[in-house]
Image 1: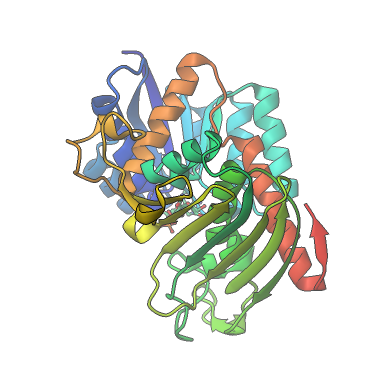
Image 2: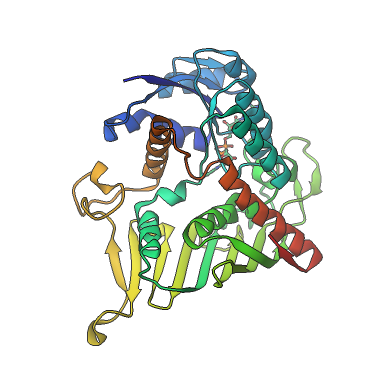
Length: 378
Ligand SMILES: NC(=O)c1ccc[n+]([C@@H]2O[C@H](COP(=O)([O-])OP(=O)(O)OC[C@H]3O[C@@H](n4cnc5c(N)ncnc54)[C@H](O)[C@@H]3O)[C@@H](O)[C@H]2O)c1
């Protein structure tokens, strides 16, 4: 099996999910030509990165990510660092001819994203962005159902992503634990962090968004900054709501918040078409709800499909026996498998950098609309 040697940058939440996927993919997708090898990981603290490398099985580590790019024994750079680092790393990695998998959001804004997409295209390197929710079997099944025409013309797309970890004013902003609340590091708040997932999935399932209007709110205006220890204004959006038109004529309603008490990661979507509807919820991620008007009248109602069947459901023949569900971490295994397959076949992985710029454009238009209280074209 030819090896593809990995250089991982960032070893937090996503560094762990991605590493877990690289370790498992060859076992569950044995037909793939390329096998990822945990060659090196990079982080700033030598003590911590050494411990991570030992715990997860990396052959080596670097305390400066730039060193990874200088090494001839690294084929893929996987960017799992905070958002403000994506651009610099991606541009440098493309320059060195490395393949790149980048965490979402691709960039801090559309302009950066365009620059990054142009760089990987110029370098001709395989590239992908980690909008992993596409690869939950129930969500992939939703895509297959929509594409088969079973819902007919789509009228409504409704989606949200809700959390509740910011309600306390004592949550700091900035630093390693709360960089998501620091606009200089995150770019935006829930828009780029959470709603970007809803947008990527929506663009994939329902096509492009033409125009939108939105509102955002920052409920707690000042928080102590973990790096300066001073109370500073909060520059990110805590919540956002968006109404939009899709190019296919349907109407979209999107909402995201970190102030929805009781919700930890409630990502839901519902699509209503002329022949039926679909509904999905991340808290019950192995189920897809489906309603079809073609059912016999007396039996008509919402079906709850347990998406675990080997023969009928995407990705499920890789895992256990029918009826036994899989979870969140498997989406990253599917992502790596699809990425390796695209490298093998010389086809474009989706979403790639260019696809992810489309999500970035919607995020930028949303933030602009909220500020100007206007309708914006995408
Ligand atoms: N696909 C998803 O569902 C998903 C979920 C969470 C986060 N993300 C994205 O993944 C990225 C990382 O988020 P996270 O939750 O893993 O954050 P995290 O805070 O858990 O980890 C970030 C890592 O980057 C490292 N880092 C920071 N500066 C560095 C530097 N100069 N050199 C090397 N490493 C550095 C930190 O030490 C840490 O290991 C973000 O872009 C985020 O938006 C995506």
